Image 1 (tube, one colour):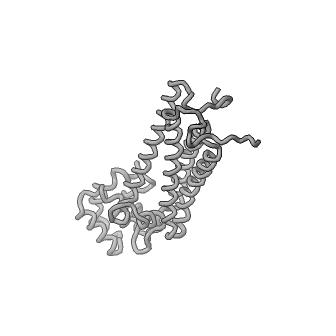
Image 2: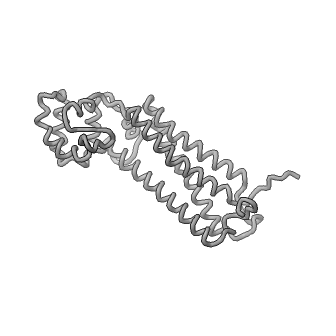
Image 3: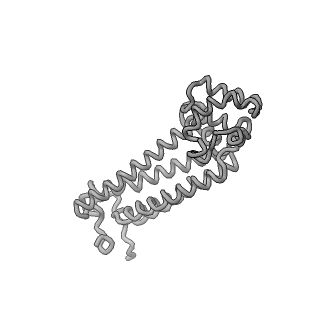
Length: 255
């Protein structure tokens, strides 16, 4: 058995190597989809090209100079508006005080562009735009992601990513790389995971910590590269004895 006589992943039966390769490739695809989701979710926030620290700061810490609805209309929700004129009509209403007496003038716009996802029945992300009472909380000063939203994101992230990282670490532990290298990469991977999630909460409290969100995400990406590519390399390309392997296993035995 592999765990009793570890000769490396290349020594596994061909069918099992194909299965492991498929698993690692699907994990890689999942990570790339996650990166794409981050890109499309946060890039529009500051209305400038590319993902920046400002995108992250505005998303997690908020912008005291504007409302939550303004940020959404200028950012991630802009693509769902029927036209720029409709967007500006709502923004003008908000800047005029967002009074209930003038709500009837922009309600048809909101119904046509927002209610498909934010009706009382659907309530995507817990947001409803059917009535003025529903929209009133969105007219408040933008304070970034709410605590309940952060709890939900953290819960989903931990429950989905932590078991996957554990499985990848198990696969990596059966490679023939040095124990020192494996230990460093595994510690780095789980530390990156903690930094990735923890930085969201820090950025919520302190806007300047938004740089840590980017750093945490980049660190997690590097960890994934190691956990995915090093096993794949050994599965298909390591055909030489350990002594000829530049990353050969270091014996734990002392003279």
